[in-house]
Image (cartoon, rainbow, N blue to C red; front, side):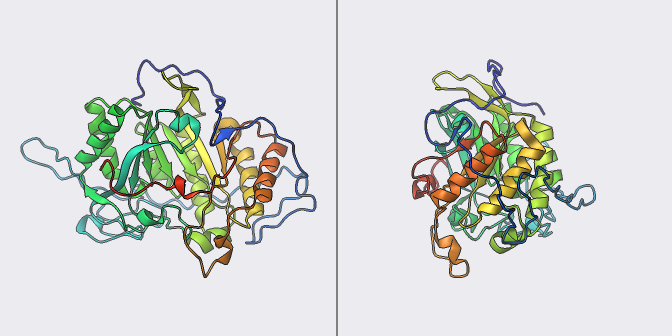
Length: 388
């Protein structure tokens, strides 16, 4: 497989292009004191002393044997040798939960997905980072169900499988082409991990029929190395979350204390595969759009400034300019959380400013940040089956 970015595209830069609104890069900001007395994450994260550049390396995630993410069964027909409906794994190991569900027989995994492919929305989306959404919009496909299932999920309606329509992989290929016809800058796959066999088939089928857009893999970051490695040649841009530094926060909010280890190992593979961000010029756009590379998102959560500081320091030390960093304050409490009352609040302006100042102190010269009232429900689209 080779990337299908249009041949006429011109790669022009590896620095973050300027944008005028929404999530955008910043120049160096006025900085505040860095860990004046040393901070300890309230969930038990590692200590960073004032002025220290030591970033603890996360332990390597435990590797399973070859084929760790399971085998997919592709049904075959006698007349043409290939059926357009690839099936779910016989024993699913697609994500780090490695639940082993026999999804091809209809058993549901921890993610909630069974043997079918379920999509909740497919439409142009304008609320990603500017080099991804641009003016034309990102051709975004929202998949139902999710391996991580965070308690505060901003897309909880589809993560829990309460919205979505079952379709074939062949129909998914058609959706990709329809989004291209609508002028999308890319194909943006949101929470795709548990449908990898069907998605890879759909990309192949759509490319054979003329799909020539970059593929954006929009993930929680909770991936296996093998799953990411299997996407070489399919994915151009990794748009990945890195949610937590501490295992305590990951356990409390996502039931995944191993999240940091899994996300770091997967991110290593993404960076090795996609390389540093590169951009292309597209007619009608105010600035260049992302052609390939890795964007790492971190959405702050209420009360977790120290956790965010540890994480940003780790990303800066380990990856430098090999990634584009996006620091977000758009967390919105869409429901009440009796067991986690801290999640009933939005991120305070002072905490967000402190994180941006910290990024400046580390010498991160360019990153995406949000200004104004970013924490609005308007960032969550209607999962009404549009475009499906």
